Image: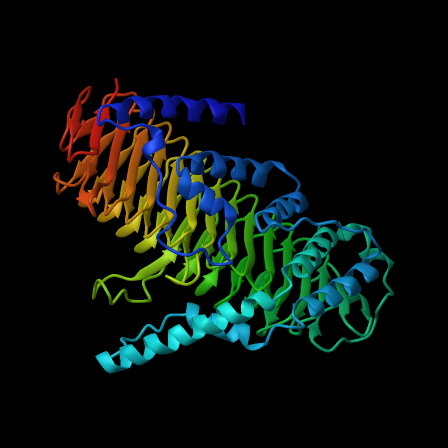
Length: 570
């Protein structure tokens, strides 16, 4: 933490001096708070960061430090504090904890209509087909407005305190599974829904628990608790809504197949999956693979080269709840299509954390961005958040990758990006990484949001078309911060430290011999336009190394617009 502090102090001092050249100080970097009414689902920290947006760097680095260094149960409780919920966990035997967890989940939704989940699903899943006529588009907009009104009126009826208390108790129980499963009765009969040998089984009325042996097993039924002690196992899950599910797999190369609301998904409840070792595959559809929807969904994989496949709202995605995917080791592949890989919607926190290995993060081209293009696709993924503008704020969508040479591929709205009162971020600690996207990407934000891409070490490559690479649009902060390595930045326009429509865009590179290439020089590499009787702020700042710029020179300073500056300090 001390090292991080000195890094932050170093660039902050240089930023002070850079801003002085255009007559500003860090105190001028803030956004007005009276442009939209505060909805009840906006995180207080977001309001605070909009007032002092550069504090987002301290916040996200502190959050990363806690994610990797605190015990996992403590990490979850820290996330609860962002909701102003403090957990007072009671320890008990596993039967009592499961019974209490189920009761708390039931009580959490006593006053909430079951349609809430369906409404949220309809709001968040895009149709890949064009809407057709203008009249049809208007009808769709009217229907969306009515769904948002319904969500606003009924989401408050969920008792999040009881829901999160259930999540804390069940998660602690799952992390300490070795202490409680061995006391169950031996089972030597054939069990419906399981192909293979079962060591223990018990039905407590409100849940069933099954323990499989070390041979390959196939699980075809959604038992509330499954512990498998080894073997190459297969899990086949249907859509599951409500209640809880805990799955612990101790060893083997396993395959998890699920429909919607499956595989470490908490939908109107709690879903926890922990796989201790093996080269595994997780194949879900939408709202799957570490997703929390009015609930908490956690997937933890300890070892192995794994593959994660999903469609929409997947791989560390949260909306009105928390979704976490944490992978501790291995060369992994993450594949999604929309709202994936560290994504958050309203009142949600979504985190994808990968600790070791050379990983690939890939977002498929599936959902056409027909508003802007006929040949590009919405990603809304990879450290991204979005709310339902103007009624409901976004959340916090984050990727933490600690080591390895990683590749990030997506199209539009991705890679440390935010939209409407939320925070989207990627923090990659080390490795020679590649970031490829098209627009609204790589430390970019639009419409009163914050987007951060921080890469600490390695020779990295950044490729995007525009509104990217440290670009803030419409009262937002977009920050790309690369601390160490010989890096390459390639863009077309409105990138590399660009502020637009009263936004703040900053690109900071601390060390290394770097290349900054752009096609359009007029609004890139330290650019700030003038809009709505006030300026936008753009800063490109390189502290050390021998560097190349399309529109500037090494060891020089240049200005674009009243509040745009590029400066090579060495």
